[in-house]
Length: 87
Image 1 (cartoon, rainbow, N blue to C red):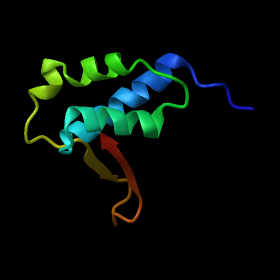
Image 2: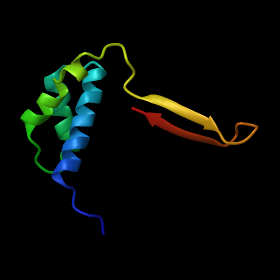
Image 3: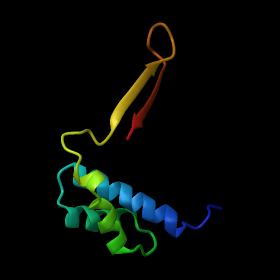
Image 4: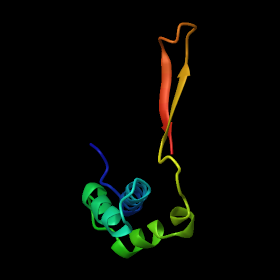
């Protein structure tokens, strides 16, 4: 049986999604509202999500990728690869 989601976990996932949406071109309000609809299995503090997305570190990012794909070949032929994303 899976554990019930905790408020810090859901808040973190919601903020992460809101930042990704904002950096992908959504305005802050739309990014936050969409992230809450997508991620918030339990109630989260809307104001706290807004404050985190409005943080100068976030709003100061321009032209950066939200996620960067990582692929490392694990054999000589490149048939087996380790893949992931850095964000």
